[in-house]
Image (cartoon, rainbow, N blue to C red; front, side, top):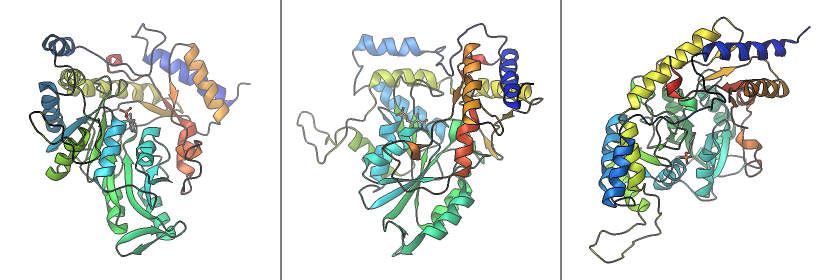
Length: 393
Ligand SMILES: *Cc1c(COP(=O)(O)O)cnc(C)c1O
């Protein structure tokens, strides 16, 4: 008699076989970029004109196109998403050893790394099993218990540090419950920041993700929905923040025809023109990619609907870009989950588990954390499926 986990594994492999029968490629990677537009034309233009580096027209154009695509007043392109988040946090006055920043335990390590760069301590919070984002109710109850207000600041009673901010992440492109999270932040005097690295094009109540907080950070790494090779951006509607972001990301250089005047310790975080050229071409196809991904998600959802495997669909009142399609294997153990992944890999489907919880990594295992029952369950049960846009039928 096969155990139920064997049945789940068999069901997963068989369903993937059927769902992806129209694609010949094996092994089939989790996610690949798609260059089907003006990528070669624009990058060649950079090389032929010599404008490949920190100055050039594509950076300005990418900045304008990106702001338009996301509904922000300003977009400041950066070298990667981690740098965008780091600089964004600094601009909001976040940092130093007397501060903690709330962050989901279930996210990519870069979110917590950016917090650590500022000198603040990551403080891990639980995820909601429906949205995969931070669980607002659980967070509120936790803060009621462990924090107190002192002079308009939210203080962790155990550490006596200020809980300065919450970084929300829209996992795999699915928007978190922003209204509820915003309400918690307002109630406890906490700054809301959005890591929208995975949710370019995803909307919450018809608004692009990123608009609930003070600012948002994007990534254009090779595996994201659009790529600049490596890259990121800070998005904001605040003119002063935008100006500071641009200044600090370009070594804090004061504009001058020849003199090297820098008015503070700045960063070399500005996106090079060559990467921005690639980004301009990719951005022209963003809507096309999102439509393809939503088609693929619908296809997977139909294929899994007759199985005990749960396909993760977009939360209510949101539209997800379905950057990475995900399923949950109910009540599976870690060993069984790993066996299921290995069975998929043997068949050439390079599926992947969700991340290890960040509070279990050696550099963060001493950091404060709320109980994480849902994140723990998700970290074991979630599996990402091959999600490249060109897999759509
Ligand atoms: C990709 C990603 C980042 C960081 O992006 P890089 O461009 O690789 O630095 C940050 N947060 C999340 C949630 C991501 O998925």
